Image 1 (cartoon, helix red, strand yellow):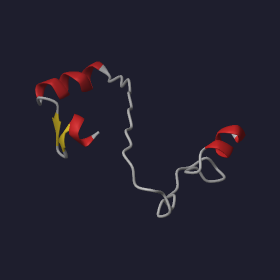
Image 2 (cartoon, one colour):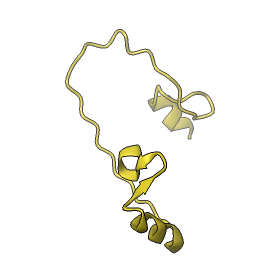
Image 3 (cartoon, helix red, strand yellow):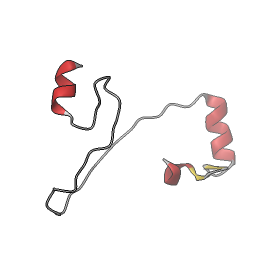
Image 4 (tube, helix red, strand yellow):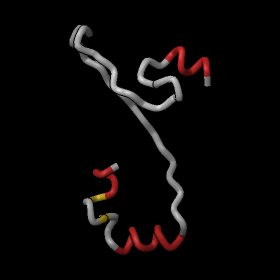
Length: 64
């Protein structure tokens, strides 16, 4: 964890996320790509399918 903290400026001393001042950065085109594997209990998956993958806060993929 110590090595990760030294490399990532957006983590505090306890490796928690924090805001970073980017006001001095030159504007440019950037792209971020992420991937996740989420495992649901069978009952939760069935409930999501039944609701067309929507929740009270909206479509789960949009909310994610």
